[in-house]
Length: 220
Image (cartoon, rainbow, N blue to C red; front, top):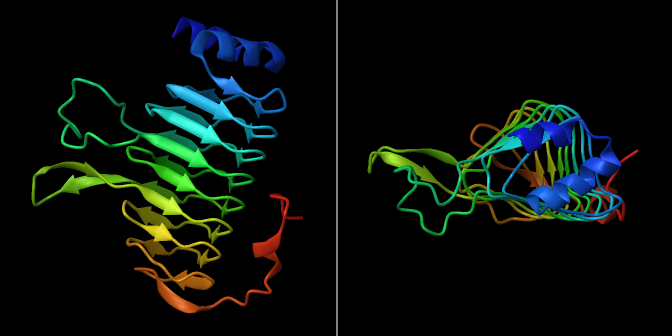
């Protein structure tokens, strides 16, 4: 805890070196972490990757951010540690408490990501707006125990504001999840707008839509 507190008080160039030396993190010289409490067991940040102020990331095995991937301010990213003596999730030997973000993937601000199991966010995908929840774990009432299932968000997707995404959900590549939707299962149809509670196919998206062919992450 002492080294974590000390590292947070250092200016970024020194803080980056301290995080790499003290915690073994891999942080590209052109990556950046703001005033944020980011302490997974492993951290990998590619060139141009960024985590903004007031974000907290704790109790998870790994965060991996590709080139130019971004996590905005005031996000809460947590999980449940691996290799503990706890009875929780002991039946899930292959569980991965990780957040993986592809190239130019973006999480905006004020979201909650429960990475008890893997959350994968694909290349050039955007978790937009505010107050969305990604929940990989819940109680299995049939077995009376905690259980967790990964969430997969495909490449070139757009996730609207204030959604709920549950463990086992898949948003296919080149798709949109509408605002306030509940994504609670694996979908397979690409180039599709999904929406509603629970989310279902609303309409097809034309392949000419420019969002899905862009080569830079930020949208002006």
